[in-house]
Amino acid sequence: MALKCIQCGLKFPLYPPKNKCEKCGGTLEYEISLPESRKIKFSGKLRFWRYRALLPSVRNIISLGEGGTPLHKAERLAKKIGLKELYLKDETRNPTNSFRDRAAALLTANAIDLKCDGLICATNGNLGASLAAYSAKAGLICNVIVPKLVDVGKLAQMLVYDAVIEEFGETVDDSIRRAEALADETGWYQATAELNSLVIEAQKTISYEVYEQFDVPDWFIVSMGGGGTVYSIWKGFKELKRLGITKSLPKMVGVQPEGCAPIVKTLVENRSQPTKISKPFTRALAVLVANPLQGELAIKAINESEGLTLTVSDSEIFKAELQIAKLEGIFAEPASSATIAALKKLVKEGKISKNDSVVCLITGSGLKATDILQALTKKQKTAVIGLKISTKEKILQILSKKDTYGYDLWKKIGKTMTRAAIYQHLNELSEKGLIVGYAKNGRKFFKITERGRKVLRAIDDLKLLL
Image (tube, rainbow, N blue to C red):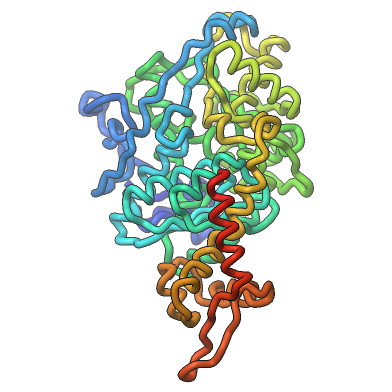
């Protein structure tokens, strides 16, 4: 077993995980020496770790009960669309309500194996929520970098699981660059999906489960953001075929929103590498990715499977979201609902036959997203406020008990960020009149002002409303 470049074939040691070839810059993926099918034994209940034999090896096992999610036969929705067999792989049933719990289980296990105290992740939502929960379970410090636009439910999960959150950039593409730089500076375990090849290995277990629950469908439809998910599903089915467990493979369909479709655009223009979208926009925030770092893998999956790509509008996505809920009782996030919007188009155009079997991946719960919830609640603003004040609140809480200096604050907060970042927060708090500095014993001490205490009380009151 090794990490192998899909372009030049150069191999690297398994760990620490990497994502780019040092020679040609190509994407790295785990190449597993597959045993003969008669030697494969999947033990235990239908859960993620059932497939440990086909995953990169880890010594520690971290689990919250991920995997084994239902394959829901969507009979009413199928009839409405005009299909004979439609299944929804309902990943909302995972512990934090998304498919990213599979990756979080494997990543935190690997981080513990490598004796890391903390990890870092750039995310537009689901992975940050998952890693925050699994880090809490494992006793790791979870540092999350999020873009300006992030779904309120996912942010709330990160906050409640006590992740250290930093807002950086307009889209997750900016956040990824920040996470990469911080990992280099701090030595934190790099858990960003686009920067750690273990994520694809974890997510391929979805394919194994679908096979055990049903078989190999004719079509498998997946929403695309960074591009890694559609490739994960394809890789899983390819491995089952290499093992001789199945003889067939599905055709992969990758769908993106009209306002943010770099991978679809690349395939339509018959290019090999995705190019960055200058002004991306969609309300399906989970797939708002301008520069898909794993777009090359998505293109590989679609081309190898003789599949399809297409775009759908935000309006079509939200109509599908309501339809899934109304007809099947599943509240899917907008990114997931795009798969049904795409399916309706493909059936109408005759590209998918009414007798074909189709599986759509429901990656996460609509309870995490803001599309419909914004019409029902005004709590997004308070959650965003919570994101911006989380570190400053900790500083004010410490100073409300005792005056102290910058280095001591850095230690008390848990060394979860650079000292320079702590001093930046102190400067901003001073500028707002919430703390004041003074000299003592050759050090600069800080103390909270009465205004600072009022702000701290206001934050406590705000939390009661969340």
